[in-house]
Length: 264
Image (cartoon, rainbow, N blue to C red):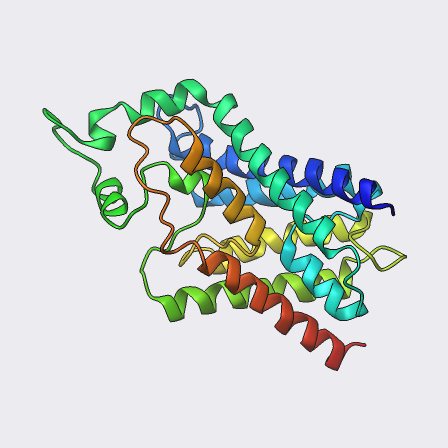
């Protein structure tokens, strides 16, 4: 694969991943959305199907890493870091594009949600949503969860451990089941297996932190949230932002290490 193929494939694939994954979060969260309050099951399966779609679209070009943790784990496994910067650049750019497209697709819903006094509070508000108030007080605006992850209980050690554990599971699934014949990314069957693993991680381990398990998936949309002209959007919670980046990278290293010891 050429560098241009890798960059284009990862940009398109990660954009699709975030468009569909962030899209299900928007659908469940925002007022005037037909899927509002559909719940965690919808989010977990929505993200799984997002992975499946993105893998099938980008696999022929880049091997469909779509995640810096996967790229780092493969680099450790293969002792080849040649294309890592290209993968990471495409993933971050794609994540930002995908997040911006979610905003475009739900433009009216974002406006309705963020100008509703029951959601954001303000003079005359009767029943401001308690979780929205709590989130804003800790630096996260009321729609940040559509773009990025955040913990239900803020405990640095636990939050970091949760992201590490979830990412180790993902990496082991990718390395043992999800490689194509060339060993450089997800193949057709691997895409399905990995999508189901992402659903499983979401259902089983997603409760504490929202399961980023992907630094680009969290950082790119968080940057977009900070830049978008959303009314009453609140903060982007930068004090927490390092955890869904560092945790998955540590998990990638651990997962690759386990693979090299136990399976290689």
